[in-house]
Image 1 (spheres, helix red, strand yellow):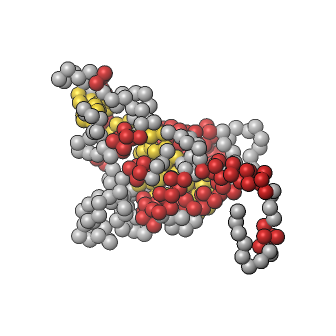
Image 2 (cartoon, helix red, strand yellow):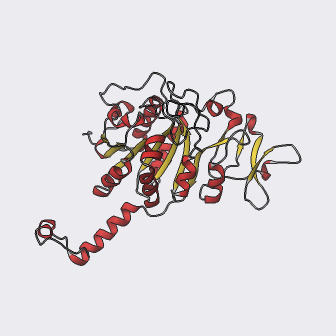
Image 3 (cartoon, one colour):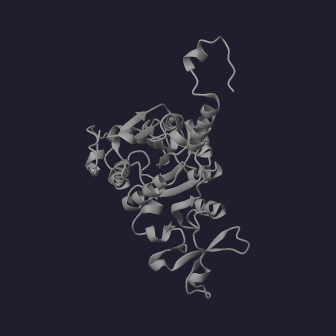
Length: 339
């Protein structure tokens, strides 16, 4: 597909399909960020695959000039796992939404993370079902009135990053659709991690849940309500970085402090360690109005990926018993034993 040694550009990853999202949809920015980032990763189109489920976000594979599968509702993890196991050399990206990934596909989502299959998993979280015209989703806030909750949702919303950490995800990050430069950095970091890399992306649906994240993303309040974490750097936020997070005695929770007040200095502020799972849980659950919302790579602590383990196990089996003959096995009788 690609000419050897010819550097690819963003345009090379743009397909010839008309993009059919609503005007103003946050998906446009995410799509552009991916197409802008892939050339920097040095990947080729013939070894890149995008797999999606069902939903607005899941139209993504049509718009990428790579290989791709637009699969069935909630089942993208199963298809993506199969693609990766069949050909470990492929670079596999999975795109899903909060409804597709956490409701219909919630079970599959848990297992792809605990298995640690080498995939980049992007979850667009707009707190609504957009494609089917605005029903409440697993991340919708309590009280949200929708066609399926006319008196207001009573369900407690899921926190996707907390769920990913609870499923033993080894790379968990959070970004914002309109912050495309930081999204690109997250894509690069996720791609460099061998195993399941999960990124929750706050995304606006201008038609059915417009402004769902305004209290976090609006420019005039962003510095006060966003905490961007960086490994090895103090957890500072706010205008002029005068606010920070301090671990309370015992380290069981964090508290907001202001530099210069009560003798607080930068030395009192906690330093982000992306390998610290306990800290990742604390950061993932930070919420307004008491705390800023945490963004960036919250947790990254690699272990061998599932696909590498499967490949090694298969190689050992072949070395011990030979390559095998599937045709002879299937024609060998009505039953057989796998050893």
